Length: 312
Image (cartoon, rainbow, N blue to C red):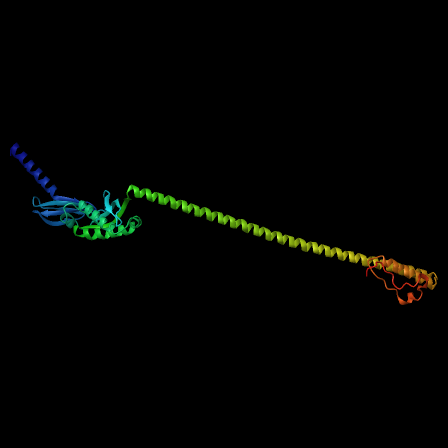
């Protein structure tokens, strides 16, 4: 075999190896290959190593099975009360059937975008401006349900739809900002009034408690003063009684001494009168003379009573 024949064999081997290598396909995770044979759908290859027939088979489409995000530009919509606004949406979808995705629609992403725009216009057309601004969750749920049903023949599952931004006209935005400012001022005024009310109530309660404490203190002081006055009067009464007792004791001792000295009856009567006179100098307003002494009262003129004060 000459050099030319050897070279031809090498070339043939290289072509065969290249052809064989082109027939071997390794499908990675989260991907799928749509394979055709002679232009007709053959099968879908999932993860792993696959071998196709040379020349007859070909990979028609490589499909990504991961969840994908489609961020569409703002779309003009008109509300039920004829307010034009722009809304941009974000669609999260996933390919569940590579065959339907490959043969169902020409451009799936563009189809989803147009379907999203028309669905959004239909939903917003039944809502007023205030409802549109406050019903994001409702709009998202309706759009997801509608898109999921519409994209099912394309092998696409719509997981969720989000309204990314709602842009009303400039005049509407200015009016909304003024309304929000007025609402904030109203809330601030209410909070300030409630604070002043609570402060006034606390001050009044403080004054009330202070007055109650003052009255209680005054009551306790009055009770203490009354008790002190009572004790003082008791001590004075006890002192007066003790003084009278001492005077009477002294008078009795003096009479006894006079009697022991042999004084006659007249002296004893005079001393008794003097003792009663001394007693009358106290707090008593009237003194009663015993009948035995009255019989001898001729020595001091007929005294039946010795008043201290003229008022009885």
